[in-house]
Length: 293
Image (cartoon, rainbow, N blue to C red; front, side, top):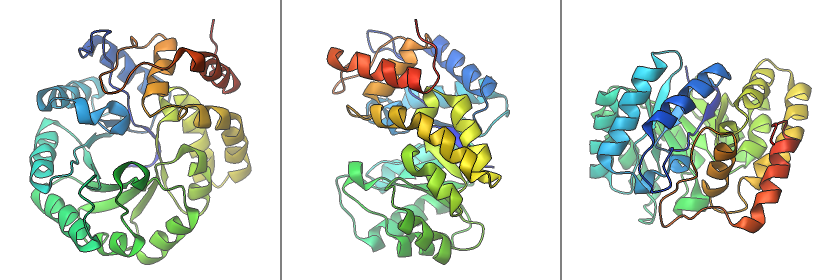
């Protein structure tokens, strides 16, 4: 159910910073039409730290209605508080999420036992699948492979989004986790390599801009056509890299706005893409096959 190309959706905002729900509908339609295999609502790329709880709930409910079960909907419900994460996770489940993406508790820097208990408590409290999310470059907290293997024994913890880009870490998880446990890349540049060793897809920033190409990359990799996946990945590499010239989601929101799908609104403390980066991002989009004026 949760495999292939899964864009971590940007959250459309007007220049004032207000949510743009009409653009949200356009964005969801765009991804269904272009082959995205599922979507993540309210992840890092969706500016989760600055979304109000009511806004997050509305985004999930509206996405649930718009998608009409065509593709799965995953909600990013993790915080750095277990109690708050429980509240957000139950709310996301009630609003219609098919699964929850739960990030490691940032800033707190818990032990591995604390991480185990955190994820276990959330999974105990809901009825939908839980995907753990490990992104130590942003959280200062690393969910190590032995802890992932322990968590994989929980019947509702179905996978991990592993965003370190470390393929040896992926191999360790696949070796030690229970059979059928999902290893999902959280790093576009190395996603093809992770699928080659047994990963099942990518929760992607790049797919916001080129959803069809990322779907085709994942389809090729999952079918064992690894040379084809590598060729697509090579073409997309300038875009993978350019989308992180400033903190995510600053560059990707600029790109999606250039596609005409959203306005260029973003909320502080993030700011719009620096003007001296515009040409670089536009060139990367063109290299990836995007037609721009």
